[in-house]
Length: 457
Ligand code: UD1
Ligand code: CA
Image (cartoon, rainbow, N blue to C red; front, side, top):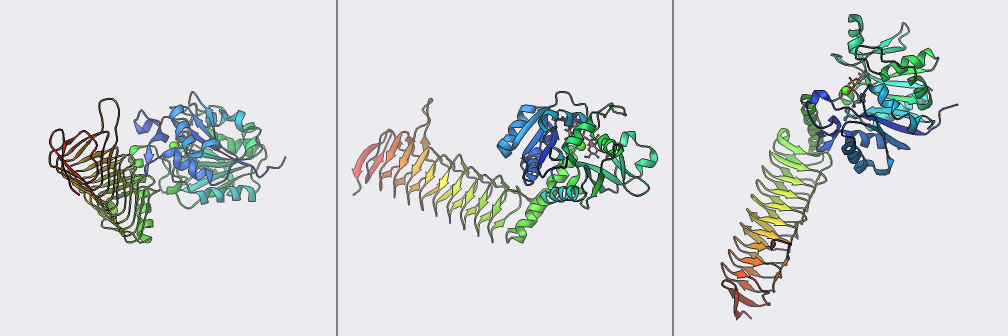
């Protein structure tokens, strides 16, 4: 039966990753702010497969959750309860894939830098050569630890031998198995029945399958890839840190090419999904994480973190500010030492200054809160001034209550706004007021609790 054009992907991700010395499954460790497995599922998805089957074992539920969040319905899972080797990992997906009659691409959850283009080329090679098995290989100066690819006298694939089972002579071979393969799924599962755990580790090796297929007269080829970094696996924390560095450098280089200034690129932390507009200047020790989008001509000073937030054009973020899950309009100024979180929204030209925390609040156009304030669950109109030390007392011990401050209001220093409460347009609160009742527009209130002193009209 000829192989059809159908394609499935299998990702092996059941192991703990002993060498990470962690309680967390290796594939859940983060690289560039995303779990390792997410990088792999993203690359896999670009092949437009029918399904992406992930072999889970250690912390299966957590891994499944992360995979579903990224690829949803495309994902399928095979549970490998005891990790008896990569052959056994594939075996655990037999029911899901054996009869799929498709090309099966096999990936490892701990090889996160793999590029979509490379996978496409591997599949093209596999189909172009009518192979039943294609092994993605690379040459390494130091191949220690990897399975070596042994070729015959005609330079064709013969077998893979693992480091621990290799002779001294075999260990000299620099061409290694990347652990990435393309198989005729039906033939793979047939051959898998012949794999035995007769090796140093007593494991079922997937790496025995290519030679088994070859002996059965099937076509097995190597696809020699040039970029070794792309297929190197992460086994230790040192390697994780090295890759983090590499990925970050790539991201920053892309942004530099796109017209963003980095004062010190080696000390700038930008996640792979962040977008930054031209002529924006990023100072050292700034972290821009998640799905953050920064406009053009912004300045972000040192010590600041921006996570999953959007900044319009011409925004200045002064030193040591934290902006999480928030939206900032054009021409705004934030910080130093400001904290914006949980859907804080700043309309254009608003200013949030020194030691001001804004939580789940909307700050109107041109409104200023310059110093030492807490604004939570508040809606503040335009051109209002919030005096130093103002607090929206939003929590009564049971629920969060809202504060509404209308346009052109002047909140005096140290005003306590005991929510729920509303301050009408153009009103003024005296310094130290404790506002427990709604303030009508055009009035001056002061005192504890604040009472209306006069109309300001
Ligand atoms: C494997 C290959 C080796 C290759 C290297 C490339 C085998 C026997 N060896 O070695 O030839 O050079 O990858 O990186 O395949 N896993 C499971 N269940 C298991 C065992 C492993 O799901 O029972 C998963 C791991 O979680 C990991 C992947 O398979 O994501 C690879 O396993 P690992 O133990 O890291 O294999 P290597 O020793 O690196
Ligand atoms: Ca590995």
